[in-house]
Image (tube, one colour):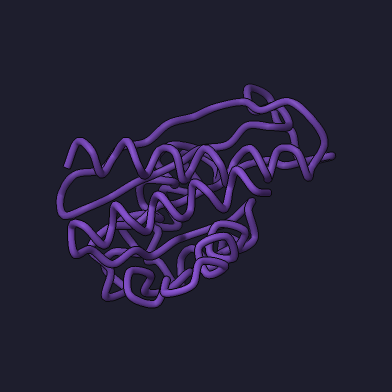
Length: 161
């Protein structure tokens, strides 16, 4: 957990230096990213809000993810991660967003998407980056690795912005 708090602190510094607000859109992490961020004193200066959108209905209703996109690609896909990140931008005061959607296990695997499959999205303005990774371990390990990777990815995304 300490590594995650260090990453969250670095994210906060990067956002503050650029004068940016962050929002999260989380499915498989269940708010874990927002929790790590809000552990940092003063995070209200750079964190706007977090959406926990575990069900497909919440992705559609809260983030405007098209139902047809979910039907076409499944809720664990880079396309959905991108739509979630863009939806968080459109439905918050944030300048930059990150999203996670995945299969933390122990069940939920489907052909081509084993347990541990996680898709990430980072968005700012019209620029979006997505990734798909497969993590090893139990449910807790997958979720912890996902939080850490989301924060690391945001740091890389901000460096390129």
